[in-house]
Image 1 (cartoon, rainbow, N blue to C red):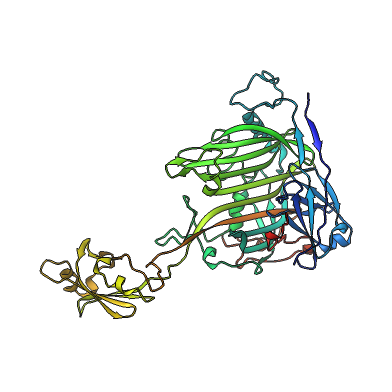
Image 2 (tube, rainbow, N blue to C red):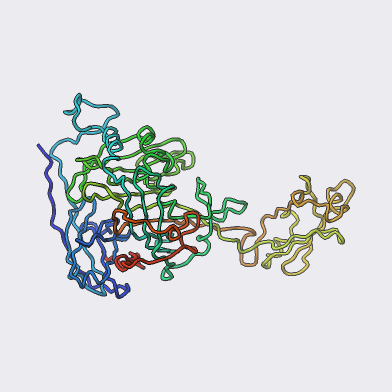
Length: 539
């Protein structure tokens, strides 16, 4: 018996919920009709105009009002849902139009053939028909890349953004419209592709977190770090880093750890299992689970491959810290997301006979250390009075700061005993060392000030708090997710390249002093700014 598809009708429901979008846009949100969960990364195209957007994480999107006034039609496609067309004129201006989509249900009347490491004894064993194992399917898809993807020069105009996700909301949102000039899959994307920036802006409608905006810092204070990983601050380009994470485009060069070179390393570096098929725009796709686990890291992901021409449609890939105390995270552990290091998702869409990029998203977790509230702002060696003096930035709790056992002073690795502690003023203490024969303090104070090397002198203070209970030099940390995303709105063959001076400097931040020139057709493109409040979803 074959596979029977039960396709539930597509539902559209318009809500009259107010939404503060700009007046030149009509806004919508895609939701799953059964779960009322947002449908993210859905393709929303303006029919016959070769432009469109991808829905945001919250399912939201916006379309310029001019397409509504022209009575254009939207084509909506999303993996696992039936494709439908929506007349833009039916969308209500100045309201958030909620579009409920019913998922495509697939019922199997026979046992699904599972993948194996070697060719099994299925109906295709022993002949040259379609592959039946996950490894064979992926191998065929990689082999077919030269056939399925453009090797001639193309350009891609799209919406780029980077932002951070903190406590359930967006922060530090930067947006741009850019055009990528890609000389084709036969060239090095990093070396040969160039980008032109049409416009960029820092969105001040979302919160700004100045601490998390800083460069990664792995120095003494480690004010911004990625747990269990290292990311060098090149002082340069966020967009270039994002494109490197497209392992399909960079299939024959190194993209990121474990995927390495997709064409030579991907299969040998992972385990795979074949899952039930899914559908995109009416076309059946293989769904293959990706798994890797060693003593330090774990990888989970999925790769979606078309069943007709073996095109790689989508790749989801996430790396986790596998160590949880002394136990490893299991493949199905519910705590896996707490250990996420980074995730990348890339999807391609077929037009005519080739696959073109639809979007790429790269995210990583990082931690920010908040500067301590209570610190020692100055430590002096008073040679004239033969004492040490410590000035605090806040008033310390006196009975704590006057205890000599709360200070550990050493010179050249040898301890200095404290005889007494005196409160000079409300925020300054003076420490008098023992100066008897043989005491280490004698070596300090019988030298000239210039003879004391900074690295030879050390003071450690413990169990000291200020009047508000803040511990000395204590820094709180908080976690955020960093996102970089690019959503293609239009692609076209390259007829003529721009002058070189119009290209973005790859080694300089995308949002700082880059050449900005809008083309004549700039109004055809727009920033698909996410909703300011995800809480607008009503369940």
